Image (cartoon, rainbow, N blue to C red; front, side, top):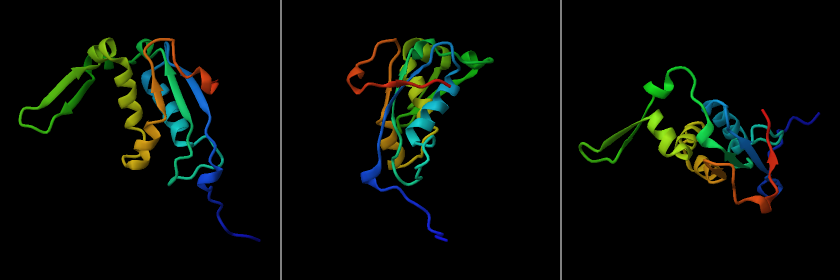
Length: 144
């Protein structure tokens, strides 16, 4: 009996394109599905140290919802590194002005915080509306 673990090679990695529709779905649920696809956890050839994930297109981010009282209480914070350089934006403001960034930040937090996660995040395309420019890649619809 062979007790070796199979590890996928870079030449064997195949990547597909998927579309996720975020309209009337919780932002976090959409983000977890996207992170799963970007990492490649849905594949039997998942390898934690390689980028085996697929490309993901998220449509209708402006129609994603936040459950509970998150719309009023959740705050996005960023810091420039300088004294007094902290900026705070409420979730309500973020979803009105820049819903793509809210979705991107949610997904970014679910990926590894290293160069592997950065390369996986580059495979993500986020759009506020229903139009996208990746028709040539023939993306499949991902239902969850």
